[in-house]
Length: 365
Image (spheres, rainbow, N blue to C red):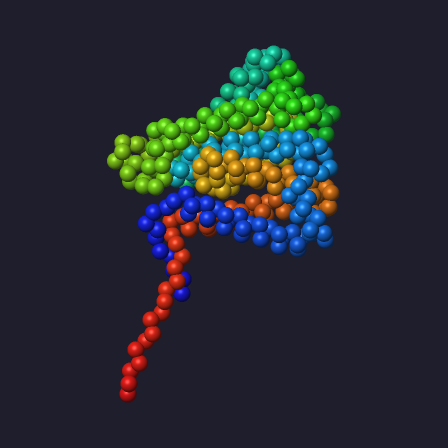
């Protein structure tokens, strides 16, 4: 019979072993699923692993991976601030949408400028938009003790309707367009390409800088210590002089601002305009929740998880086009990886033991 025995101490090797086990579990299940979904499973697996060196130029494919990873990592590290403190903001998708809306509103309020000097102000407006939207569940949690997990999730759908309404109503652009959208931003305002012909642009540098700044705060400042105290020993948070309500405010403000910044960069650099929600939102906010936990809420882990998931997503799109394999395989691998990593995380704190049954004494008649 197996049972779990608490570890007296945890080491780096303990975490490495559990992560490697999770990767093995994810790989085995993913291969089995690929065998079931494809008529040419060997080709599908090979192309999923090596797609940057096939078809389009390698720098284009890797640029797509870096592009997705930047958005995912930025949102995920913002969410990790709250998750560390047991504050469950799962509405980053809505905050991403309102960040885009806030950035476009900033562009209009500035009088539709055509100079690059306006870009920082537009991005700040996007951060404010995401932050204000995130503060709604924070207020409901603090003032009325509502469940922030539910309210933040429901606000995602409200945000998507607001985005679509603005595109078909007050901010409606060219009526001849095939979808509801706004007029585009001036090209001179949008971030330029880092490498011509790829998906890399200076907006990704902005996201990377924001990621590194927040990672530094989490790892090397009192803020990070405060959140670790709240995560592991909630009662100790009060004894250390930290207010739980202030932790809630901080968690939602930071996560909302990071999601809003990602939305602002996406609008200015990728689309250049707002588009109705179903054609605009890419589920970055929901995927970032998975990535935060895959990365064990640690900045380095989050960055690696974002690169892994974006590589799988882009590869799944490639094999859908080349082999006709449904790209929903990426979502399935995402879910399998999440459960595998969460399940094996238990091994950081416990070790599996087998109990030896003692022989029963024989009673002589």
